[in-house]
Amino acid sequence: MRVRVSKVGLCSTDLALARGYMGFRGVPGHEFVGVALEGALRGRRVVGEINAACGCCPTCLAGGDRHCPRRSVLGILGRPGALAEELRLPARNLREVPDSVGDDAAVFTEPLAAALALAEACALVPGARALVVGDGKLGLLCAHVLARAGLAVTLAGRHPERNGLTGVVVEHVGPLERSGGGFDLAVEASGDPDALPALLPRVRPRGTVVLKSTTERATRVELAPLVVDELRLVGSRCGRFEPALAVLASGTITVERLIVARYALSDAERAFEHAARRGTLKVLIEVHP
Amino acid sequence: MRVRVSKVGLCSTDLALARGYMGFRGVPGHEFVGVALEGALRGRRVVGEINAACGCCPTCLAGGDRHCPRRSVLGILGRPGALAEELRLPARNLREVPDSVGDDAAVFTEPLAAALALAEACALVPGARALVVGDGKLGLLCAHVLARAGLAVTLAGRHPERNGLTGVVVEHVGPLERSGGGFDLAVEASGDPDALPALLPRVRPRGTVVLKSTTERATRVELAPLVVDELRLVGSRCGRFEPALAVLASGTITVERLIVARYALSDAERAFEHAARRGTLKVLIEVHP
Image 1: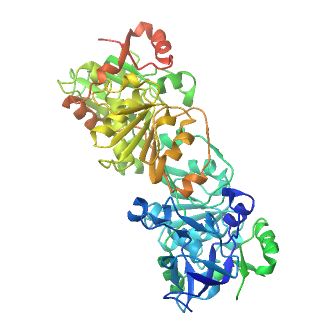
Image 2: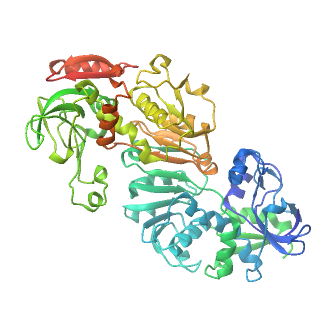
Image 3: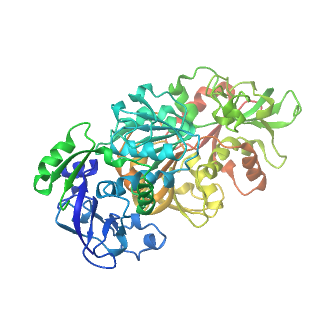
């Protein structure tokens, strides 16, 4: 289905792809809100799940469409992305945006869904102690999701001034070295390949580490402590859009406050340069605002 | 409680400790069978869980005694091991050996318990496809446990002639490169720090990798595929002795066939040299045979 693109958010994956990660060539962009030009949702504001699965392979039939081996991924793998006048996604990927959710907030459906996918990676036990490493866009959303689920969240990163931006204040300790230890759960959301070795000793025996961000460089890690302490290391990528839209519609998260700049599509190159500056939160590209 | 040591098995951890791993100094040895000299089991043949926990800290009270931060570990951490005339363990660590289990088999209680602990690391789903990397002592026991649990096991290693030694024949493919892919579960039991990067691409999305062996060197690994495929990496160490003794008593495993040499305690140095030769299965030291 054709979608007229309204706004697009840039994320670290877009920047990595631009540097050559995954060998992607073509139109980037996967965080978008737009207006459907075809189908049952024609004329409605929509967002879209980025994994376009075949729908008929064993993986898809078992409910694993986000891992369909034949999938294309909007602006990431074999499918032109959202940084264009229009994009195309299968009808089943599109979700109508509730009236109460503005376009700025709707652009965050995809990253918020990714943060909410923490609940698929491990049990979110209220009262458990969670460490989130990285106070960038994804780290802030992960900290928000965990805090709303009732966990006691410690956030490590270089930007204590960002604490509370999303509407939830957590414990912000600054650099990871100040976080203490004994955490039940740790979330790697910094994108730094050296973060994992540094956070492993901070997790209690049989605790869980969720890797949320992809890193382009390999990581050198001692595996013996992981065996001795019987840790669980879980990779986590995309999430479902429905719960993310429900959270946005509930008004309990102020994602718009993560937006730091807006550019026209014709200024996309400058937008990428801005987004690539260290410590930049969300940069939007407005195509049809 | 004092235990007169009958026989001791050497394992890769003993060899690593001898090379300096974990900085252990003192009497090594943790796989043993002996005769209790004190307490309720006095005069009975016993084996012993190797983690001596404090029993009263929050970790112990939550059932995590194998992870007690104040624990000593027989022949590994702060507690003299089994390569001696006598050893000491708390009474609660000792388990009587059933009459039907001979001393040779009883020496395998500890490593078999470690293999059975796979069921604590992940769900063992009958019919699931499992890859075991390493056909050494631990790998063979893991393959046995998984096959008996009804999984379809593929074993990779340098010794196809060992297939069936424990009483279960699995698919032995030789080198890991010949294993194919799409496994639901993979078990790293080779002790090779380079095995993990090689086995990750062989696991299906959302599949599980269990790390059973500790490695002394760090591993260099690309974490991005772990995130993209949402894999689960689980460290697994010691297991409970009761189920291991029950399996040994059932007669469904021929662990004795893994024994390749026996030495007297006075020949312990030669025993270590023998055990350290590449491709050596179980070397026993007989103290009071």
